Amino acid sequence: MTVTRTVHVNVPRLFAKVKETAERDAVGFGIERAQEYVPVDTGATRIDIRATSNTSFGASTRATRYQERVVPTYTKTTPFLKPAAEDVAKEMPNIIKRAFRRWAFG
Image 1: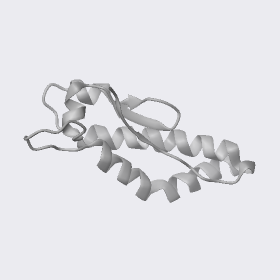
Image 2 (image 1 turned 90 degrees about the vertical axis):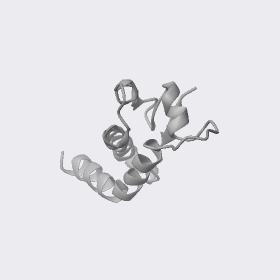
Image 3 (image 1 turned 120 degrees about the horizontal axis):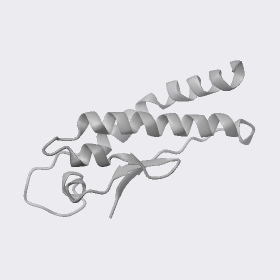
Image 4 (image 1 turned 60 degrees about the vertical axis):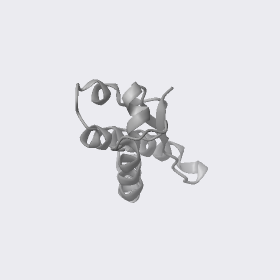
């Protein structure tokens, strides 16, 4: 089981290339942030964080399910994908602006 977070960019159809670029950049940013937030024990989870599709990022290690509280436990959890997705949401306006500038100005 893979735990993932999905990024959706809602722009007019005319700007399909902008949307594609923004989604790719947002997923990359999310992966970077998740790798910063992940609690490191062996490093296996950090290495496993990757893009699961063009619009999603996540990790499939067993520890991920426990850290993200997908599986009920009695231990303290330290989510790292959710805060990374929240950071992506906060940064989305800037990501879209950069994608639009690259599309418009080459």
